[in-house]
Image 1 (cartoon, helix red, strand yellow):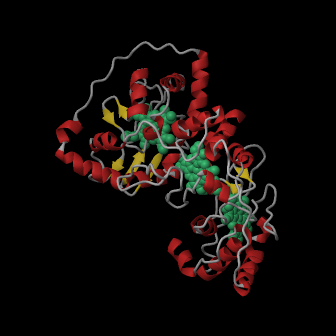
Image 2 (image 1 turned 135 degrees about the horizontal axis):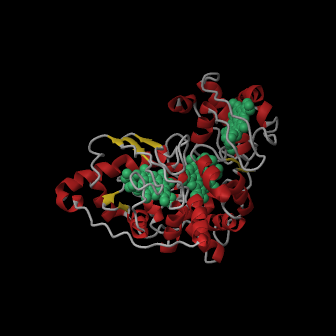
Length: 417
Ligand code: HEC
Ligand code: HEC
Ligand code: HEC
């Protein structure tokens, strides 16, 4: 599920770090001493706070497998370099972190250093580094109360040279940063809180900020969108969001329910909403929206009119009426509890048709949204519609309800099959 996150970081990172490390092997391979197990007596408030933070930071996404015990690990995170597996982080002494002190735990989240073992950034310590010590202690306190699961850790299955863990020490020295840059401007209490929620806890940048040759985040382009695996994480800077019609209120709806007038969360964003943001308090969801748009949000842009060839659009419309309108409505208005609106949908409003084409080709499995907002599955059309038909359809949707040029060619569809 988090596969794409790792795909992007893994490309280049490990190769560069490992290659360089061969030169400095002695220094990089050195294990650091483990601090002693200090006394730690958490308060009930600390435990409750930790439980909330674990949701906000989405630890379960990578540490709780679908059929496994909570936080017992085993979640497979595939990448072109092999598979990573989330670790057992229950208090089990043999397989989990039962022997860890609060100091050990903080060093793992803050430095990517698990009692002398350098973690791969498939564990997003690159973001968690910004967590306060108090919040790290609360998370630790909560995890120490979950049921011990005597589940052995699954070894990563990485190809050479990516299996050489010591390379990560060098990567950390070069690329690990104390703070992440902001895409928006603000000073309000909400903005500050939202910044912490987005950057330290929610690790939004790990998917939404583009990466450089060695897998490090591009500081000059925070949250400006990045090519993930199959579904691209769009630009969520203030300008990018406003260009697709987002308001602070609609963002709040999206984070707490998963469905807004601009559409629903899908691809890698679905688990973010499903496991994490839907559990945030109203105050925190509001803060997240304020941080994304800034203290002075840009006005949401109306749909621009697009000139396009009438005959070509008519061909696309007839496909739409035949296979899509039953769910998405004759006027693209959507149907409550059946399907989202196409008129003004943010996926249609992206200049890059990638996510629109992928949604049509692959469909979207049944997803559970907060409250009563469950929808049915969106069927896949890869085997029933031709490249030509899908391109016509994409052009019709983009020009009519997305304010985007009708410039999709059959070849663009073919490339994504
Ligand atoms: C995007 C996936 C992902 C998320 C989210 C994530 N982790 Fe991890 N975590 C991993 C992976 C993968 C490893 C193993 C990394 C390695 O072996 O280098 C790991 C390792 C760890 C370890 C080291 C365990 C050991 O025995 O070495 C700890 C502790 C940990 N995670 C805690 C957390 C906590 C707490 C959270 C939430 C605040 C969290 N993780 C969120 C993927 C994730
Ligand atoms: C059986 C009903 C159904 C049909 C038929 C259908 N869709 Fe969907 N579609 C959905 C549902 C439901 C979602 C939202 C899924 C979710 O997020 O869980 C969706 C989502 C989408 C999305 C992603 C946007 C978003 O905000 O989630 C696009 C794009 C889309 N549909 C386009 C189409 C096109 C084009 C067709 C015709 C080729 C089509 N759909 C046919 C039900 C349908
Ligand atoms: C694991 C990768 C991943 C993480 C982590 C992630 N996102 Fe996303 N996000 C995506 C993808 C992929 C999409 C595109 C699919 C969609 O629109 O639902 C997306 C879509 C969105 C959208 C909708 C944009 C639009 O115009 O449709 C918003 C808003 C958003 N993310 C905000 C956030 C915030 C805030 C966080 C951190 C709390 C976050 N995301 C964390 C992958 C991720």
